[in-house]
Length: 291
Image 1: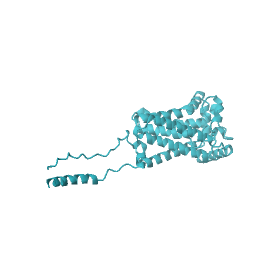
Image 2 (image 1 turned 135 degrees about the vertical axis):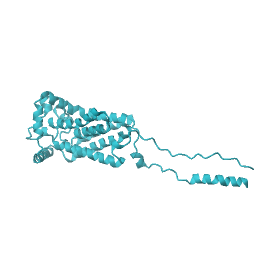
Image 3 (image 1 turned 60 degrees about the horizontal axis):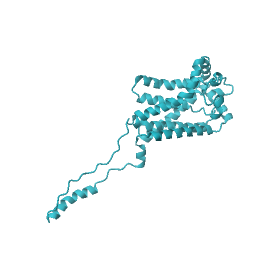
Image 4 (image 1 turned 180 degrees about the vertical axis):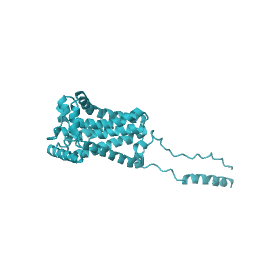
């Protein structure tokens, strides 16, 4: 009978343990939304594959020359109606300063990639918890830009008929654009809308301004996209409204990332949260039964 009593006392503990609801396990969707520590090999592969895909798709867009020139003319007239059509003045003024415009040609050709990759590396090392969300914004921005190249073929100002713009790369014989000179056959020349120089530079600027604690870095973060805007216009590669298109694409990227992660990328934890493991209840050792 004593044994029966002990069993009865121990029994409720075991029954309670077995009937107690288990902690909820994260679902597939919740798991995808949770920031994870980025893996270097995977990120290098992903970025390389993504840029290759972007280049292939962008260059695969049919070069609809007639439509692109027509769209450029419409856009130019729209800017004149809005009172912002002074790209030609900027182009001619800065082209007269040889050392400056040559520097802008090289800026246009190189810094676009160097800065973007540099910010990605900085995020990977210093803000691993925010890296995936920030990278997602960049990828979404680039992805929606590809749709723009298909839907709205647009000639840059330097190719516009009767625009009297100066192709600064051709004039100064500098390597400054994949769409000019000997390299023009390797790139789609009529993919000016939207401007990813603006989309990517603004992403870099906002990221550094929001996350850096070094004052001079934050100042340069604001200067960089503004200077890029001057460069793309001075070299006659884009209209002002192309830049606006790049900003819209970036806003789309941030909006989708905000919905997916439940917060803006910059408000996520800096470090990757440690995985939550359910705590196991430790039962006291069972007492021996008296005969």
